[in-house]
Length: 405
Image: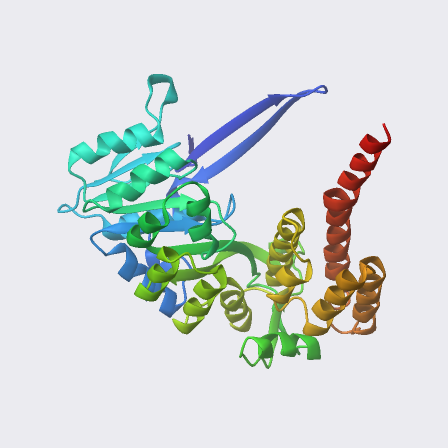
C-alpha cells in the first residue's frame, strides 16, 4: 500500500480467540530496506570478512539468529552487493519480502508442490551463479542446499541457532553428514538486534567498578559510558531505533579437520579464538564503548543465552555450572559456588548464597532506575530454579507416584 507516496507492505495474521479476533500486523517499510552492506553495523574486521565470504564462487554462507534479529536484511544487503548483469542470482523465499531489480525471486507455494527443496532442485537447472534460500528448516532443504554449494554455486541462507559455532552442531543434528558440513560450509554470521541510544538525550556517565571489570575480562578498557536520560523524541525511554551486533565465523582447514574427526565442540571454539573471531558479546561491548548502545541491553541478551544453555544442560543431565562457567555474566566465584552446591546436594542453599553475594555488590550509582545487576540476577536465578523444578523435581515426583500406584 502507498501512504503519503511512501511504499509500505503489510503482513496481517488473524486468530479467533474466545473474546474476539486477534490481529497482528507486520509493517515492512519498502523504502527503508537496508540494501547497503556498509550500513548493517559490522565492525571493520567483520565487514571485510563478510564481503570476502559472499564474494567466493562456491560454498554455503549462513546467517543465523532468532526471529526478528535482522537476518533477512543482511541477506538482502548481500544480494544487492553481489547483484550485477553478469551474475545470475535466483532466490526462493517464503514470502518474498523485498523485490530486487535484476534478481530472479521465487515464492514457495506448497499447494502446487513448490517447497524450498523442490524449488531448489528446479533452480539448479536454471544455470545460477548465486542461490539464496530464505530459510533452512528441515533436513531435505539442508541437503539440497549443501549439495548445490558443492557443485559450483554460492548458496546464502538463514538458520535458527543461538550463535555461529552451534550452527555446525545444528546441521549435524539435522542429519547432515559431518564431511558434507566440513567441505561445504564457508562461514556463519550470527546476529542480534539491540536498542540504540537516543541521539537527542544521550549523556556521559562514569562506569562503575563492576562495569569496568566486565570490559577488563574481555580485554577492553572503558573510561565513560553513554546512556539516554529520556526525552519526548524517544518517549522517555532513552532509546530510539535498533542496531545489530554480530559474530562471524570463517571456516579454516583446522576447523574442517575437527568436524571430520568428530572432535569435541570446545576445540572449535579454541580455533575460533585463535583465528581472532569477534564474539557477539565482544561486538556488543565494542558498540557500548562507542556509545551506540548500553551495557544493560547487551547483558540482557547474554543472560537470556546463559539461561537457555543452562536449561538445555539440565534437560540433558549435564552440570548446571558448566554452561554458566563459559560466560562472563557468571563470575568464577559464582560458578564455583553452584558447582559445590551440585556436588554436595545443597544447590538450593547455594543459590540463596549467590543471591546474597550479588546483594552485597549493589552499587547505588549504577543506573537511574535500578541498582547494578541485582534484578537481572534475580531473573536469572528464578529462571534456573524454575528449570530445575520443571526438568528434574516434577519428573521425579511423577516417577514416585507411578511406583506407588
